[in-house]
Image 1: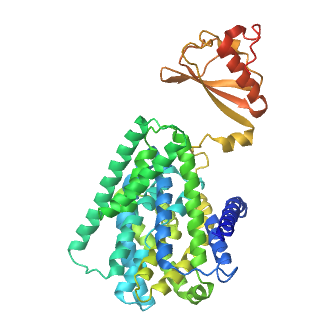
Image 2: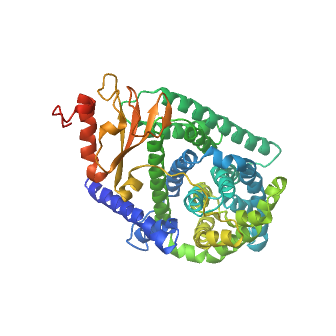
Image 3: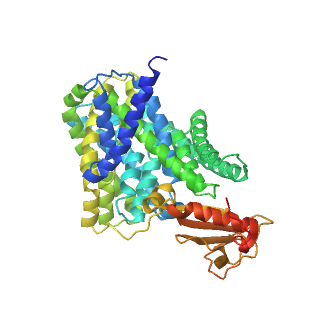
Amino acid sequence: MEQLPLVLGTGGAVLLVAVIAVRVSIKVGLPSLLLYLGMGVLLGEAGFGIHYDNPELTQSLGLAALVMILSEGGLTTRWSAVKPSLGIGIALSTVAVAVSIAVTGAALHWLLGLDWRMALLWGAVLASTDAAAVFSVLRSAGIGKRLVGALEIESGINDAPAYIAVVVLAEGTTVDWSLPLLVVYELAAGLVIGLAFGWIGAQALRRAALPATGLYPLATMAVCVVAYSSGQLAHASGLLATYVAALVLGNSKLPHRSDTLSFAEGLGWLAQIGLFVLLGLFASPGRIFESLVQGLVAGAVVLLLARPLSVLLSSLPFKVPWREQVFLSWAGLRGAVPIVLALIPLSSGVPGAQELVDAVFVLVIVLTLLQGATLTPLAKALGLAQHAEAHEIDVDSAPLDEMGAELLQVRINAGSKMHGVYLAELRLPVGATISLLVRDGAGFTPNKNTRLQELDQLLVVTTADVRDAAERRLRAVDRAGRLARWKGESGQ
């Protein structure tokens, strides 16, 4: 208990610096994920001297963070945007994973002299692209929806088969004819569980009458977490169940959907920050430097051989143009997921696992710097950048604060004196206007001749300076009607 203030203060300071680092990374063009890793290394034994060396705990916390990241990714993914890319996305997350494991394993067996099981384990660890890196980099890169949709689907799903492959190889499970059936079962069961929890959760949330708006985002995230645990308990893919449940929920008509998405985005950022700082804290700079050559060799194999070949083979049925194949090959971003997966054999005591973890750290740092900095220029060079591409934005306090504006939602209850009042008779102060009127479930833009009715809902946009005056005027008309001023009603 005596150390609690110090622990909380340190955690709060790290989180605050990490949030500021997002702005810094945008200005200097450096991926923020690397800054979080650097913060963790700075706090560790090579910096402030915090000693942390617990692979089991790191693995558990890493998987928990990955569940949050996948939940945020699924909730914020528009089905209409990724639907045209569903086929290629699924192929990249399944066929490409298998090809990448085989190609990487064979190349590293020959180049680094690893035995076949360890070489394939390296391939499985490096086969998964990182959801956090893809969601944070590609959604703001000005790339066409088709490519972004394919990469989002891939990063949301391919963690599942890669995780299964790592567990099988780390545990030394006998590879025979039943293994493909096991993989198919785990993926299919994870898909079904995710669909079930997503649909049931959406139905329940729409019918629930929770006492506070803030409970809906919590309940939504809880559904995703329960989907993960249910998948794992059913010996299925909990990661796939999480992403699918979040995808279904995010594309359902949830109550307070905007609040839920904003909460999920914040929780996703928190998970990313915590995960990368923790991984940086776990890393040992001395060991990482010793694994520099192995990491660079593995990175070159993945980037120049395994990824392009896996994209080529998985995209053949879809006749993907060569320019898009080049971009998909280069956009296979690696991040925290390979490091978390590498901790599985380390926790199981597999010989050579520590060298794998250290090499993966090197690979992630180098590839994130190289790919993250060149994705947008590559897209422009290939003619794939679409600056006019429409993007969904969240209407919340952040952009409104920048404009000095606020939103007010007004409902005209039964018996209100607003009933029958013309819009012009509201006489709202300059700087406040009614931008939307919803009546009987249909929304339209009102004009000065629109007559208000009971049960109408109004969306009022107002500058911060006149918000109080606008609220007072609305209350006055609600109480006394169009002649509120003459009747001495001020709306206080």
